[in-house]
Length: 180
Image 1 (tube, helix red, strand yellow):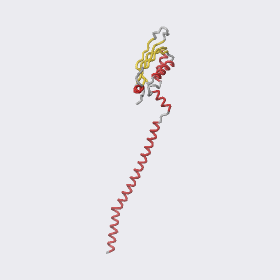
Image 2 (cartoon, rainbow, N blue to C red):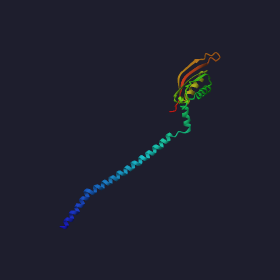
Image 3 (tube, rainbow, N blue to C red):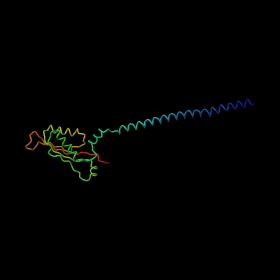
Image 4 (tube, rainbow, N blue to C red):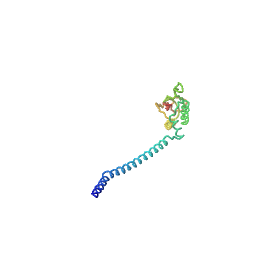
């Protein structure tokens, strides 16, 4: 009888291992596999985070030359004098004579000027037609952000000028970034 009890206990132990231990071992192995996969996902996420930070650093790293170009394109402060010199240089480079160059004075305090986003200008120049085309090309190719609102070309009415001279009247706006 002792032999039969030992056999029953042995069979019971095998069945216990079969029904309880093997599923637990399989679950533990699956959990270790899931943990390893999650660890890999976390490592990939960390690498992605580092790549993102590096990419943003590269994007935000603007060299001095680019900053100077941005300042020319859309300056932060309103400077009528600088615009007058800029337009006068364009006129001189195109070999034209400037009759008038007017930059709107926005007045007010310096703090008010920083809120201004556009500054009107108008100018009238005299010279040959090809030189006027050169002036317009120079204005178009300039880094300085501006809009031409009106452009009128007429034959020069000044009797001291040659008949091949024209008068070019331009009205437009210069833009500013402002201090926001």
